[in-house]
Length: 202
Ligand code: SF4
Image 1 (spheres, rainbow, N blue to C red):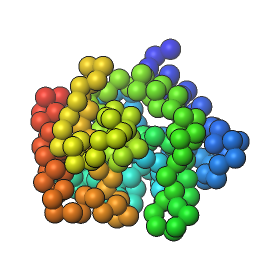
Image 2: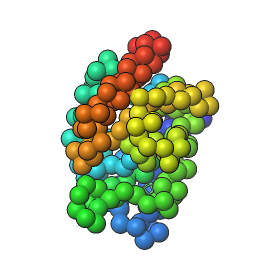
Image 3: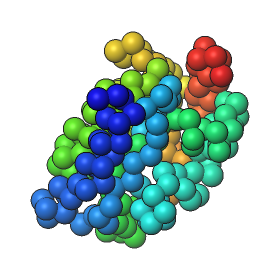
Image 4: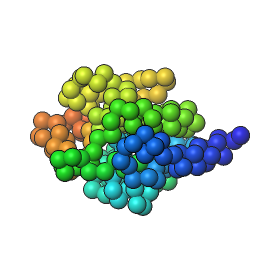
């Protein structure tokens, strides 16, 4: 099956997925998946937010505004990025508000494990040259989970022939990227992404 059709079939399967709900977790049914099989770059976020779940557009709201400011500094145009790249998440359904009411609930380990086969299949089909994990949950897929973000943001690694450049979560609920000491690390990560963009011929 050509890649394009294979990805369309995968998206259909993912959109029909209700595994977390069936396992007893509260999620807003209706996974968010977005992107093309030719994408040289894949972003992996934590999980969609409430507006993403409605409009089915990753990083649609406030955190998306900040993310695309960062990617804009790396030389990307948002509209073009959304058309040509692949944007996915560790879990693909909105997990609801956190118990404390501050930000969204972080999907638990079992939910992450339930969703992981979808992400593995997306990565295998799209085969991106550059992966940008966004936020701790996605970063933990590629970097030692115990390392503090200070030791990870502003670095890159090579895994299975792909370059991985992590970014912190850009949501307003996260204060990490707003701390003055961390802004320099975010700038460093943006420079690494800009360099990869050039190497990819963009
Ligand atoms: S989060 Fe992932 S595994 Fe869980 S129901 Fe949604 S698509 Fe399925």
